Amino acid sequence: MSDRLIIFDTTLRDGEQSPGASMNLAEKLEIAHALRELGVDIIEAGFPIASPGDFEAVQAIAQQVEGPTICGLARCNAADIDRAWEALKPAMKPRIHVFLATSAIHREFKLHMAKDEIIRRAVEGVTRARNYLSDVEFSPEDAARTELDFLAEVVEKAIDAGATTVNIPDTVGFAVPEQYAAAIQHLKKNVRGIDKAVISVHCHNDLGLAVANSLAALKEGARQIECTINGLGERAGNCSLEEVVMAVKTRADYYGLESGINTRRIVPTSRLVSRVTGIPVQRNKAIVGQNAFAHEAGIHQDGMLKHAQTYEIMRPEDVGLLRTELVLGKHSGRHALRQKIRDLGYHLDDQQLQQVFEQFKTLADRKKTVYDADIEALAETVLHSGPAIWTLEAVTCNGGSGTVPSAAVVLWHRDGAVHKDAGTGDGPIDAIFKTIERLTGIDLKLKDYSVRSVTADEDAQGEAQIEAEHNGRTLRGRAVSTDIIEASAQAFLQVVNRALLRQQLRMNPQTEAVTAT
Image 1 (cartoon, one colour):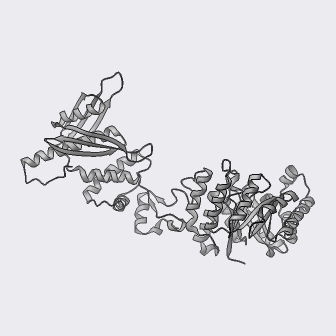
Image 2 (cartoon, rainbow, N blue to C red):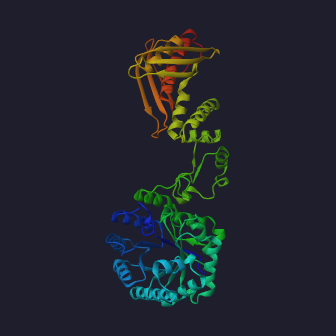
Image 3 (cartoon, rainbow, N blue to C red):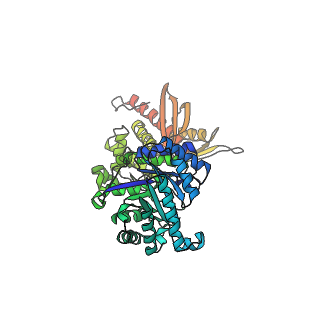
């Protein structure tokens, strides 16, 4: 038995049948070229008789994409098969994939055919396709709900008629791994000539078992898996290409198989398909989801920093990611924060790191995601803040048309006293600044004030920058917070502290110098 796993990608056919995933010709060609670079063995390019657009797409891919086998789908009737061949003729390696439903429910309610008619039509379809080319695949649709003896009979007759691949679809995602594996085992034991054909599987994900069922079939001798990028497909989707490929690669010790997939192209291809179809990949999607190689828990991050395999069974580089992401959030610890700060190019001592860590924990409680820019802002604030004489405890303000702008401020002095005051101004920010000046006894001449967003999300931090003059010297302050009012007060207070420290330096020249700008 071969140890080579054949990857049959049906993103452009079954994947496009996802609601809202329709693609135009240029988009299909772009994805087809990406699938070739990914290394898939077979591209099911479409269903040529379904529409003129499908025919044109299959034909264009057959003409322009070299390397993989190019496949077209057809029902077991002459018109479908003839149309598929017309589209596929330009391909260097064409395949016609014919299908006919076999389950009792499909026979009775959809096809209104008896078993002998099903067999006759299946044989005729395979025979007609073989008259055009040598590579023919046959699928008994809804095989997972078909009586095993009848399924074996249909498959045997299809192989006799010339099918080189027999696909056993779980069309509605009904099977469970043990049952599905048993069906493959039954066919291996009861179909004469089964060794003449490749056994393929095509599983849907209605119960979340598409990948599990496909992998179970491999252990019983299936050697082709039909799958899609990102698990796209009708209803809950198909078997996910990236998941089944990486399962076989990661657990080579168990499956003993290898594929021709260039796994480093998995993430770029996933992102392309997501962009083209407009269907986002869920954050916790295996292999290609945003969280697939991300760690937030402090214990996990500490383990990852010591040895990656403590919490990762695959390397992110193997699927096309640059590196593992240590996501900083409220569960993160000092080890991950220290590493992130180093990665961003900052060198903090233990005291400064502790200050950043405390501010980071406060920020993480306010934000869902803490970005690199947030960490940079915190590090910059600590590096340039200098010793604090006054610390902001609380601030509130009121403004708007028809009201007098006002502010209330609570400050803590390093001698342990708490000071409170309230006042008015030309606007709420001006009221805050004037109140801080009264509380601290420092008069500043404001020269510039600006606020900008540090990141782009809705809960982004705001960065306030202050430039003010005191005794002929220009001093600057900078602070960040998810509340721009708080950030403004902190930045202004930073300037106040620097002004006070300069006064102390003039009074005591031996005092250690501090950064003033």
